[in-house]
Length: 225
Image (cartoon, rainbow, N blue to C red; front, side, top):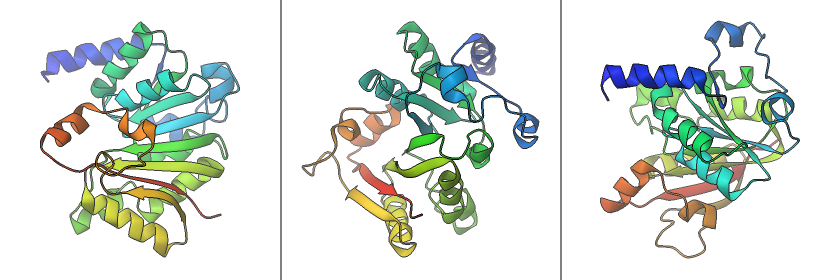
């Protein structure tokens, strides 16, 4: 994407009512106005809030919002030029139950209050295979602790990935840490019994992976208290 196109998207994001772009300072200072008040002030309803972390173009957030109008969805990503597509689609299709938050995922606990989030989707994250990159892996112990701070008790986390490494790493970590694995599938399109919301929604990159013959994996789990 050219820099002109990126700048155009950044400018458009600033005009979108469904996009929130706080500064890092705003988060760390504890002055982020929507923390604890997403339902009341942003969505203006009392429905459950579900996050999509590393939402990319926002396809999953938008499709889940269409599928479940009784829930609120927030796509989270630092790359605003990417989720511009999802934000624009949501506005064009008049989907009041989806929004986008531009931030780094390691700051997530600064934007949501304890028990404010009902569920989390992690879709096709970078597996960060190199050992030095382990700290950036979105299902490592440190990130799971961050999610625990904002998830209500019993809140569900979903991991959908084309990386067999990420799938195996996460399963091993969950079992080793005593978390509850509710469902795991190492090839959702070939094995029967895959949840409908996993196979009926495909991201841009997912369709490319499928064309390459890559299996798509999925884990649904709960964090131990």
